Image (cartoon, rainbow, N blue to C red; front, side, top):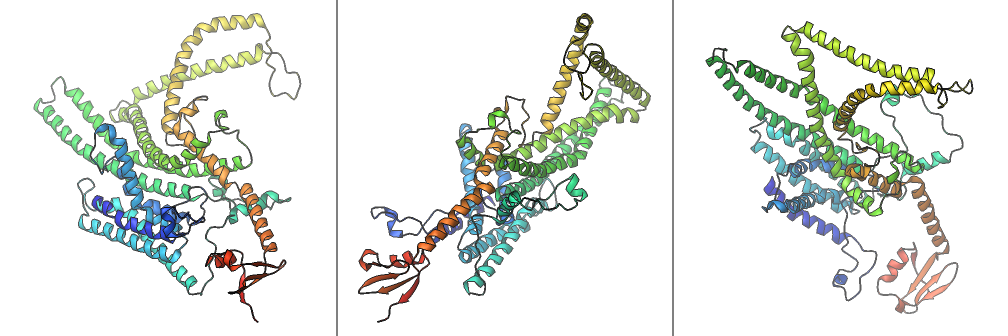
Length: 590
């Protein structure tokens, strides 16, 4: 597959060249330019509009999913096309990323090309090549040394499924474009300037009487409410699809590593049992070795059990990030920036542009690393539960466990009770009465000042010891929340004032601002009205009919009569000049 990745650049470059030659430039080059020989042909093509694309969102997402295996190779730094020193590894990874992107460029270019008939044929052929090679690789090498039987199927079935979907998509594009080419079906506008959901959003804002809302279901009330006036851009859909597939592959790879470590630990346990048996369980190290063996068994069981909750946590994060994106975008559209830290109210334009390129890759990396960190944290929590609650019961030490648990709960309860008692005493004796009956709490005005100062003096020494426990509690809560939310790129885990040090959160904010400035429905609708009005005014001033006479020149008849000599128009340019204005050719009679 790695060898085929190199050779796939040949058809990829060919497809890119063909689609580029089909594109027309808006402005002609000068005669002294080398590209003048191409006329108005050959224009740079784009694989995907990362900002304002709302059509074919799932097709683009599936195209990203087809590259999931290559992305995982890049993530593990296992794909290195060149052998260079350690200090140049960053350049090698950059070259590898460009090669992977170039090999999958035709999928996106054929999906977004205006020439549907040609692009569907090229895209179907390229997808078929990848599908055939992947299938051949699976059939020839189905098994592996980690998972065992059908290991290759486990790794490659998501990409194979995505390639099969792309084959169906390009086939559908071919049939539809062929019907349009034969005149059996009218061609629809592929990418309108104003999307339907954006127009509906603006209409909803302009309604004096909002529509009556239907009764919401339990799912809409508790989990997620669908908004018909909002659509996620293709970038968000593609990132989510690719993150799901990469997370699946990462879990499989992690499980393979666990199987390898488990086998090594089984060998180690066998050696421990042999040593204990040779010493007839009377050696000085026997209790320690038995505890080590028990720790190994407990760790293996806890690690397997926590795979599911760690996976579900990261999957829920992916859905929650989409929900947060929609909520925060709507608040930005409404001009509300209070949910953002103060330093991000006016971000740098250049950093925001870079953020739109960083976000997708960083989101996937955050999810993968976040899964591993969350899995480790949940495993540690599982070990604590096993050694504090389960193992004492297994070793017939339940009464001692309950006694220690009761003492611990009683100690914490007393400490919390003393803290609550301090608040109650302050509210009852050291604050002045309420100024009005409607006040919810007493004013911040001291009362009984002499007793208050004595109260502070005697509690000063006790609060020093209490502060030690509060500090440890703060550290524990910070570590727990930080590791639990490490995969959430949409919120920072740093304290207020240090948010800029969180590069992932900065990329999220920059991405929000770019989308806000370029896809705001009110702004897009306003620009749409300006463009539509400009076109209508040009059409009103346009001349309805024109006549061509080879000897006399071009006679134009309409609201204002004028004559354009044929010598002033380059051969063939008059036709483009007329077609752009929607004029109709009528041969002048005698």
